[in-house]
Length: 422
Image 1: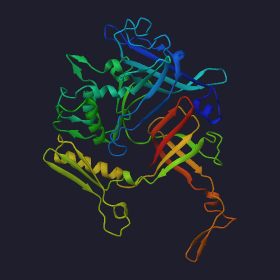
Image 2: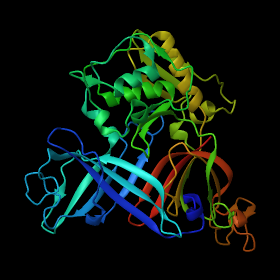
Image 3: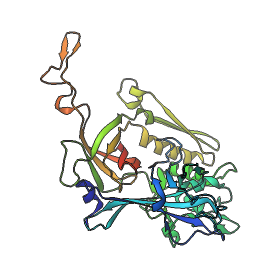
Image 4: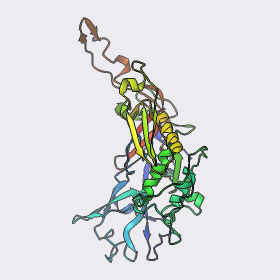
């Protein structure tokens, strides 16, 4: 069977999309099996997901997708409608959805790419035209709906605290187990799968009444430079925000063809230096004060602080001691004190790549038209050597980067990736 990489690189155009759901039964348990509802789909919409990263991308909830279904007979009305698929079930709210997408090989066998798991927490929009829009949030949304208080506040590493949060109980029953797939805890919750050691030990963590489980997942992830997501198996994953150990893909523009990956970049709508995400000074407010880590520099030394200013990243985490706050401030500064370029690529449909995948970029943009620029006595460019010339407006050669954002348009079958060099 061909791999999905083979099918993408050779321009295969047979793509499958499938939407399934699990409804909440009257006993408050989800159905055991996924029910295929692809035949009702009118529009698949766009799936977007990225880091939930305070420092780099801002504190935003990972987004999901919006599906448009045929509702001509009230199939997706609420559970009180006799013709509804939810009639006889507990509620339409909190339904779990799974979107699968990939390629078909020469034998019409499925070669899977992305599997997105979402949940309907909104109020679906129906109309008199016989359609209904259902907005899906990532399964991570479930952590926003429950308070973090009540978990053990004994000392522990950030890994241990993450484990306590996702296994939080109410009345002796686990809250989140039913949302994630897998028969065992190891299947449902893949915490620190790369077995990173030396994680910060927090002596006496504090869980305020105003904090959700999601809020504390963000806190403890930031401390250790980790992120959390949902993988293709429907498991919760807490992993370090470092690129993976093996190159997953080569992004190539026109003229950069290779036999393994082909030409796959359509255009590069944005390339930035990453200055807004550069922090030469980090201040962590802890229980008794503020810990500050600042890069050493002097005016004129050419450092990022000299060139772009001594920008300060501030964060409050009252449960930390002074030594814990100092460690956190230092770690964040060392990661973010120097600018890292960020690339946004529009590409052919590439559905199998994941966050943190290590990729290579090779791209030469469109050359500019023949022109001359006169600066004082100097003339730059002529009709035979256009500005940019053979290099084009953007020249990216063999750049190593990791994926920090992915957008898949499941109707137009196009992809967009946000990449950060390392």
